[in-house]
Length: 113
Length: 112
Image 1 (spheres, chains in turn yellow, brown):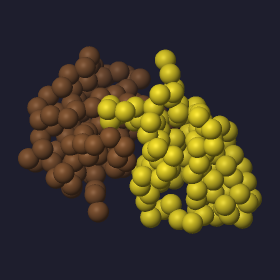
Image 2 (tube, each protein chain N blue to C red; image 1 turned 180 degrees about the vertical axis):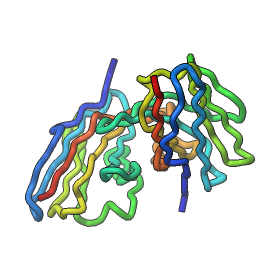
Image 3 (spheres, rainbow over the protein chains, first blue to last red; image 1 turned 30 degrees about the horizontal axis):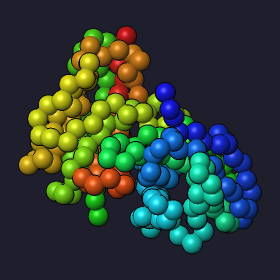
């Protein structure tokens, strides 16, 4: 069964460093999302991406964040200068056209020290 | 501000019983409703989705939607210890490509 793949599973970084979280959405899906979940809190929307551009972003997704689809398969989330409060699970999700159902990857646990 | 509310629990039920999980949402324009299961430290896993008022059954799971009351529920029949997890209610609009708004989740514990 097709699945959304995320790498790495766990990323440890120092405050102020840049990190790139990678996702390979399900092939033939057209809509892509990043969500985050701080430990013990709810899943929060960060950004959606369609047709090679951002469709919508939340207030969490400030200038420190960016997304890119550098090739036909990868979808990346970059945090330019990490802060302690960026520590969370980051989930990538993808959605097929005309289905309105989002499938989530296993997540990347980001730990900012 | 779109809000989705759930009882945080924990909700404890004995094995074999029916577990009832509830969710309310604030945006009357919401059209699509999803239940995800999340085990500790894992990603959300889709259980069911429902778009129309009424009941939708899939195996041991039944989703119920009442748009007039802005209420959606999930019933789990014959609960098993493996059902012990946090259940997330997610809501979005009718069109594709819209982000989900998640509730905080209800932690379910099924006691053997």
